Length: 325
Length: 301
Image 1 (cartoon, rainbow over the protein chains, first blue to last red):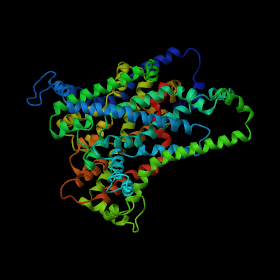
Image 2 (image 1 turned 180 degrees about the horizontal axis):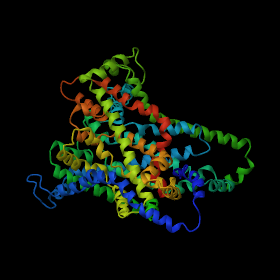
Image 3 (image 1 turned 30 degrees about the vertical axis):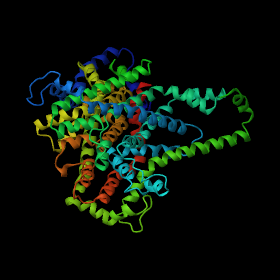
Image 4 (image 1 turned 60 degrees about the vertical axis):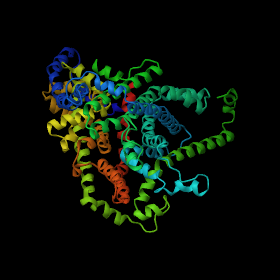
């Protein structure tokens, strides 16, 4: 793990100076006496967490149980409204389809690129790795503006080429409402493939050398080393980035909002767009809170379902547990 | 893969496999280059398009520079349109990102280090809260956050945007594991024997060891804040307090309103200006950022 940098060597001379032998209990006493310092150090975070995270979280649940009209407690009425709101569920289903297609393509591409960069057939690994990672530094809003204009026939003369060749009846319209979903897929894939590839590549460099050497000695081809050794060894990383992508997909907001400004694709395209419109265009914060809670629930269900599909029980927070213990 | 290939491999290590190797290298490089084109095309277009004025944007070849570069007049338009609001947005994005990243790094490091290096009552509870909150989709909190900030009079202020972004559970999680690895307990015990206070030990002894992690945390928070849109969009109302993302999206939506000014060159150049600092610095920062991102996955290995 890259994290170990430096620490161990710096401690050696000092550790040598502490008298060895019966110091265990003294150390324990020293640590116990200073234990409260840990709480003091944690307190700024805890205060901010209480006000700006736990507070809103609890408040959103309280809010979702109140009547939008009177503010009085109404039980699950808002949730019933959400459950019967077809445009909300259309948006959720749309994101489900989006996730199936886009996340599959993006993770597949990220895996192929990472394996190729890690193969002996790659030239210019550092340059390619940097180029792929660049979109991470571009805000989603700016990415949507760039692509939004680039996919408009008025601004992009290249989209008119098929028409001029007589292949289509007019210039290509990728932001047409029927194709907008795929335009967003193109943009999101552009934004996040390199990010996922970077995580995978770091993980691949941690595959032990001896394993790869042994495979080579056995005469395994590079392709089978990549698919049968490297890929299974980074399995957990793949699952991790898929989960991040599922969560990201269900929270999609920036790109559809900007594309709607550019090409009127609709303001109910994604669940988050609907929540925003409900709260700030219609001023119905109670219903928006219920929509948010349901979306959080859908996210958790989707994540758990994915873990269920990949079956093998795993512990994503093994390291935390080691520290807690 | 096949038995035949396995048998032949040792025999033809010479000229035959050299040719095959070169073919594979060419094929690999071609595919990698194709993917690089996908990444670079919109950025290239942004640079080229930012040099065109309104009529050039709609009349010249999309991917070729115009005969007369209009950068000078576009820059003038960008910094003077609407009383020069863009200058504020640029400054605001720096203020939000710099303050958030600095303070979030301090708060998260203190908490992560405190959790990793001290045993105290409630420690496990805090850990569960931190890890649990990693799984809450942040956007679910935006509406109630707006209402709570409204009660506190924090909406439409700089603090209102910065304070919620200081709650960075991933940063705490990252620093707790980083501290556990980077700072040996024995070292801290020696400092205690010497009578040094805990905070002084943290500042003088542990801080240098934690520095690589702190830099990573700072950068992740800086980029995250620079790119953020949803939160400032909801919390801010005054244009002179907008960050770049909110400001530019307001310009984009103003184009589609009736009788609006066609400010395409301003929007395109403004987009370029808002990504340029990060793109230029990225080659130097990539290593630190990549380590932070990989962290969540690595700990699962």
